[in-house]
Image (tube, rainbow, N blue to C red; front, side, top):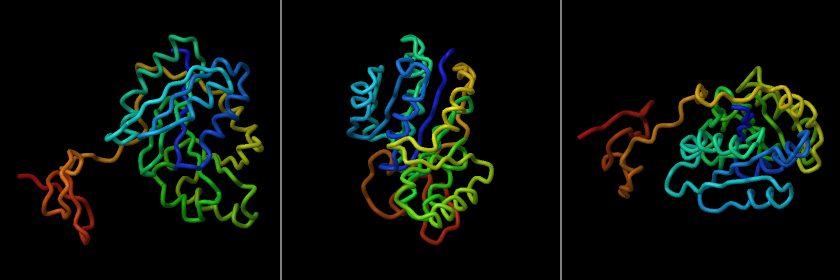
Length: 236
């Protein structure tokens, strides 16, 4: 396998696609990039990137399935596709809806893109997504003060003390030089030995199969009561 896998997570509208564009522009040969977008019902990023850079792209709609779980299902196929078409880089952008999933694999470069204008507590709210990433890319730094940037940075370090932090105005590409070097130095991902870095959230309950009644008393599987410290399992 000669493909380098770059996994890009983050909440909606954080600037993930803007970061993807800057990465592609920085590659020695942008035509060697391929792109996969996972979303729920609508996405246009693949069309934008194909039109701007002339690179091969794919998108997958998850529909009723968690988009990050969908990504886990199809990423192996996507890596095989990227190798077949001669790509050297596969940029995989997740939908990032629940702020809990961490779709990074052990042999990928895991980027968590987070907006500086999302509030100083945002890194704590999406801690699992940040904790297993290699790099936190903080976007829209031109819209906040220096003091806000420093507080935001400390919040990220609370979650992941050793993570690399890149602050950028992703539209203009400022501050991306270090990330470009990390990508240049990363090895290809051996497909047959790759695994997730963390365990995704459980999806084992009757809500997941379409049961509409409200209240834990109406459901089975992994459930949660309002005052219970942990989830419990309730069977027949």
